[in-house]
Length: 107
Length: 111
Length: 318
Image (cartoon, rainbow over the protein chains, first blue to last red):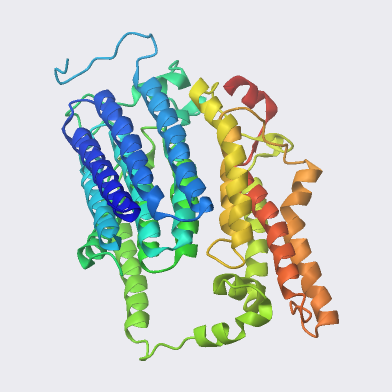
């Protein structure tokens, strides 16, 4: 297998897997029972999905600036995703520190 | 390869657009915000795929700007406070307002 | 090579659906959240229309800064505010519907009645762009062919700031803008406000620099810079300057002054107001863009920071 074929297979694999993580994130957002679990599913799935898509796109870009751009997008997305997760979870938890009521009977 | 990247962009866009059902259904304001957040990340992923597929570097810059500002709506959400004269129940601390926002599932109209 | 047609149809349906939902939903806060998503979709639509310049502006302003502004503004409305609880009477609604229909109908008529092919100055811009030294036709139009419009817009921003400040009561004059201040910020937010601004400043300068030849420019760069400042203010890491601060006011009018100065020099050196001397067009355009970016960033940040509040009120709040 030539280098081009290997990179093509790698791209198809990583981008497909990343797309599936977006699907998983959407299903989690729509199907999970309460806001905190939805938040959990979402921040995991979309950061991983974007990461895999960035990883898959790297072999298709030839310029080092293009690589830096792609990786910068992912790192900034990780920073934003982690911050948003912390902020929203902090706002959703009751201020007395007890675990929130997980309405809807989730475990 | 170009075809594949474009199809992947279309797939991701369609997927996160489906998540916008949460904007309609809620039930809480935080849920709606999550849908917008997912749309933002998915939009960035679709833009990156589109940018590489069409070799248009400006689309990558757009993805960068969107990512840079991705947290802003959530920052607006958690820091939104009421003026002391505008709290619904007197004595409620402004900080409690954000924690107060999620509604019990099923209750559509509280605000 | 492009996306399949259903994607464009889907985007169009999505943008219309979200717009309809934002208009018809009853709660202000929900409408603000829908508007954030609407801004994101609209940025994607602009990409599909081939206007990455506009998409950049929409992404930075529409979903970034405006999202934060609207969500905070909506959260400040008391729950029993008349805007939340009462509907306008039938007379007002009929008048509003008639006016909106008239505006939309007039716009639709203008678009549909355009002659084929539509009148366009685009070929003239393309033929003369090389004289400006810039490669991005949008920048060429904004800073050379229609520079007087851009000058007017930069002055309008200063007037908007004056208008906002004039909303302050007399005893608040001399205080600091208060809209972005609140209770002590959570530590993740303070962390974000410490880590993100260096990247944001880099991206802002990048957008200004590539704006000469690729989509980007001073306004997009300024919006990103303003967003970083707003983030620092929201996190409470810095206080906004007092409205009486001379350096800050100087920075706010700096861009317009540089623009007018170079334009006036053009009347003397190149024969017309806002004309650039032969060969100097690109450096002059870049100077104007740099000065304007600083001023627009300061003005946008101050517009979000709101009118000044008296010092004692701020002390109670923070």
